[in-house]
Image (tube, rainbow, N blue to C red):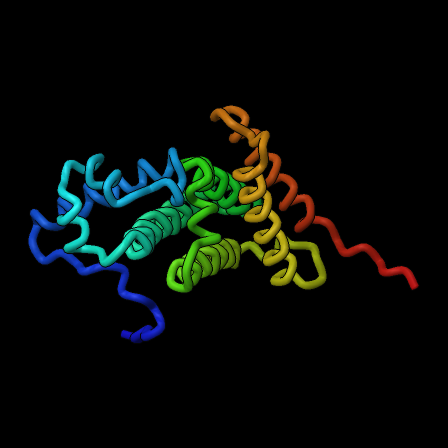
Length: 214
């Protein structure tokens, strides 16, 4: 197994089932508060009260708020990676099926926790920033892997570059939707928007390059 020395240790891992259950409650409480109030408004005291534990219990596991945010980032971003992977595995076996699943999975990931998911991707501090970048890289890799059997359906002159462009466009659109003042909200609006993003990506991938003019 490859060791990654530059990856910070987010917190002290629990060794007992009871400690693991307490940690899960703390992280769940932190996620609930951060999802509604934002990371800046989240406090150790508030998390302790929501989780039903003492402030000292949290400080025995985390050195400070930043380390708690790092642990929360790990928990949430890993969960999003798993969700996108599941949706892509269940996609209809075609290029359009994969791009549609990718668009729906990403938009749902951004919608699940309001503005918290994009905030974690943008991150604070070197460790969190690295974690957000790793998630973006992993989600991108998952799409390329899922779409690999169908690159013959891409009509652009450079299918790999075109797929990369489409993936970035869909991710950017989902990110933008989560931070704009009038996002697509409600299940019906989100489904329609995800459908449109998938259709946009397929239209681009299925269209030959335009001839360059001198």
